[in-house]
Image (cartoon, rainbow, N blue to C red):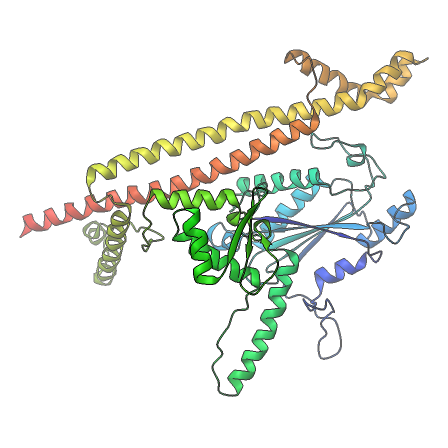
Length: 511
């Protein structure tokens, strides 16, 4: 579930960001933490590398670029950009993500998406919330110090020309989110669809309101504990946190909008209204409605109505879901291999637990009948192969889209140079001077001819199509993973049942 965050900085002290990455700071005031001798305290763990800085530090490389190109001279000029890739805390345990692997991914991401910019890539093992989420800071100087190869996502000259400043536009962020999603997929890490919002959206302001509120609550609880009193509340919640929980609890048990709005008012005093096709909520004691978009996509009109319809179509039951189904051990075969009595006792306990998990899973799924179990396995196998086929099928159009965007960009940018070549007094010298652009132009023209392309498509339209394809691929890839997980569980359960009855039949024959 990697996320991407962007921060621009107007600070002309380029060394400040490196100090922040290397030394410990108070998360609320931003001040450096000092040890007993008054010296700055290093972070307990980090990995830091620089790119495109030559023999200089990041700060020196950025200052030299400013002087060389005469830019970033005003106070309001953006001097640097920071992109933070935060990985899911589960990746460390489930997918083997280490700081070294995250740093390698960050370096590759920086090289591919910010070529020519002086950069720092630094990996930390944890974030402000102490959830164990490994994250990578990528800090780039705003000025590109060399011309780079034009790539399909690059639309304007500032994206590849020397001496131009980086601009984090909506189009740039969409491209980078797609890159993060594809990076997680190729590395086998958890991911979410970064292009279509979040179920529960927490703004930067709300995040820090949570943090400060939790700090005050912890101090108050410490004072109560010292006085021999038991704290009543341990977790601080914002108004929006409470509202999300209340709406979710009502939504879970409602089957239509009238029922939903009535329960919200009756149980929590919350008013819900629709305006211009959007839902807004008014908690008790407030005078201003809170829009659904400030709470998250889970609470907007479309998601709420979809959930209500799903509730009406099926009866929800709360059951305990086993995380993993153990495979029954053939104890007699292991004893024949030379295992001892201690192993036999452990294996019997393991088999009892595995069989209990198997029965719980089959009862939960309603698959205690053998025919129903076989039918469900066949359905999952078909869904598994279909999802994988869709993922593979989408890779072809995505590759074609990339090629087409590259050739459209090359053709468009070199069109003026081709006109100048026709009017040049010394065509051979002019062509030698612009060999790279003309070669790319001719390759693009040949590509269009081979593919019968008579009208050049819009770069923005191609970018949007690519983002849509990437979103579809991510959706079906997650479906493929979920289906594969359930399929493996049911196949193991089927094998366990067969093994159990086979052992029972052998025991009866022996008796």
